[in-house]
Image (cartoon, rainbow, N blue to C red; front, side):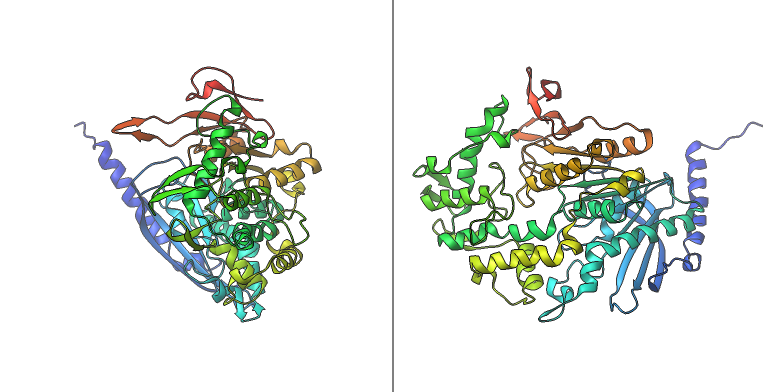
Length: 526
């Protein structure tokens, strides 16, 4: 009698058996050796649980509404004498592990989150993240200060670098204990703070990851974070707090003036270095506004504000301190105001830079940053560079260790980024290149025209960049370009399809040649 079970039944039986085995292997006792020489483990808690991934980011292949099982491990530990408590999470897929391991980065003051692990686990990756010693909801003062006037240096070190290195090591050990073998390939994935963290790993811990995707990176932290307060200080110096409507109008006038420098009228400035728009040329122009509603004229002080932010931060002697923003970047990102009417607005600073100036640099969480003078700001800017370059600056251009370890790193940065200065990344990559003309062999940087911070905006988003990194690490296929797409939009009820383009590696520039500007083939790299 010829008898066979349906394939679906066999797969279900195999999955059930694997699940039972995974539950046994995920027991706390199997991770008794999960520690490092320099830490004291307080607890290791494990559970096998389904991970549900709803809306996914575009850094991994996008599969919506995925549920998969994982051995979820929480390692709680401290550094003897540091009085810190760090939680590190390792999630290990119970089915179809692809032999890879990935560290997931954080954002802002957040070192990392458990919630970031569901997506890579759904794609078969073992994954790790860490809270760096403070929770996502903690105020900066609650962990960055031991008390008023005194910094918590151990926790700042944890956030900056130490916990990132330990998470990678703990995650790899847990992976080996669970599967019986070490991961074949190891990766990092992060944007913003996660981009800084990826660069920190390449600079300071170059053997931890084979491949690093570190985008819109918050590198040069000791300089660019205080530089982020410059738009708020300019408003104070002018005694003028413009509405979002006015500064957005100035930005739109600049985009309209410089849009076709690249040969295409599409609302994107692809050649920012050639844009010489004069904001005073639109003083007096009328603009219709909403929220609050009304009509206003572009003011001279509004033009002065835009000019100063584009030029970048300066000290009390007029010496440049850091880069400004490209003309197309929204000035409201750091030059935010809260308005009750079009002419009655008050300052609304970006929280991270305000915390840095008050809590970290001044050691005074109750300090009102709006009371700072230009002289105060100049002093604090110098203090930031002097005290924190070695802690969190993340701007060492010597990547010799990463190169020698065989690592590969990709970064891209939106040229419309409204929070992190695009030219700061250009500066860093240029310094690495000057130190090592062969940088292109292991580290490539792709400018992304029209893209805002970590995504958004009308430009081309390189959603397949992580897969490009994998291909580089595992197949030796270095990306000469990155395929990127715009976000589909609607005109009425009709959907306007996404535009495509191939982003070019710096210093090459994406240049329109001919044909349909919505298609990638219309552009080349020059």
